[in-house]
Image (cartoon, rainbow, N blue to C red; front, side, top):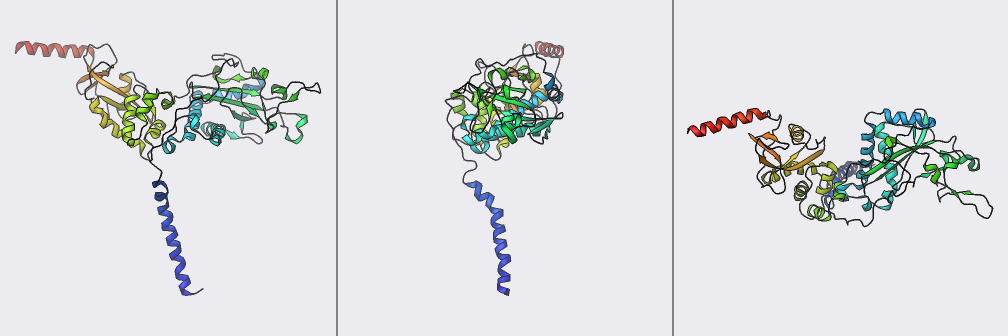
Length: 406
């Protein structure tokens, strides 16, 4: 190799390295932070529950062969809360509102909808630190089981390796395994999780044909759904259908409200409008990311506080004195990455409604017919001592006496 060739190699490497450093900026500049609009869905995420045989407040005792798995789930700390949020996070992650502006299941591509079941399994695995099984997804309390998701109740598809069947040969499972069946619907903020021991007889069969014998009802992937009679053998965790899937606020807003939020103005203006429209309820980080569609979306919340204060709004977070203010006003207390906005109005000490003492005045959540005025500032660290009713009355009497004397 000549000296001239030796000298060109480092130069080429340096050029490539410089290009690599700069590539991220060039790659995102044309699309990132560009506002995207999506249509209102015409159909729901799931078919109506209808007459599906699932309880809402069942107190049934689990069968002996499921007891260990049931005990494992019930024994996890805050299991129900963590479970429902894992379901919520699975859909939110796929919608990826910050980069796509999507705010409902119907905006996903066909491939993404198919992947939702995998996302549910992955998030539950991480949330509960579930060990992988040898043949199936998981092992819990010595039992191997698979996690199955369907957007329609009863739509779970069971592969051959989950149950024993002589006719399946090498594809047959080593045993009749347990399945965790999961479902949720963003349409009605409902969800459910159940356990069943899968058997050949609990899966669907076709009616007898020319041979006079029933045959197994496989789909094109050699999977089968649970039969109508088999569904009655599912043990539903936490009693059946739950009605508190964390709310997708953008999906459940009135169309006019959503339109006032999601339109092509600056990300800051959209976030400001979000907190004008969604008052008194918890607004998640995902919602803010979807509305702002910017890399620095959380900063938009801090700026919204300043922008909306002259209109009487406060935006409470999870730090400093904010949780105490929320408790005094009997509002939901935000967790980290959540916010609650309300419009305040000044009230007298005699007002019989939740109120908080700020800037030497009483403040309460404003009603729609009450006048607008600038909101007080929220202390950075500690909420000031809240006067008792007796002290307020004594101070008022003293002030009135001084006025009479003058």
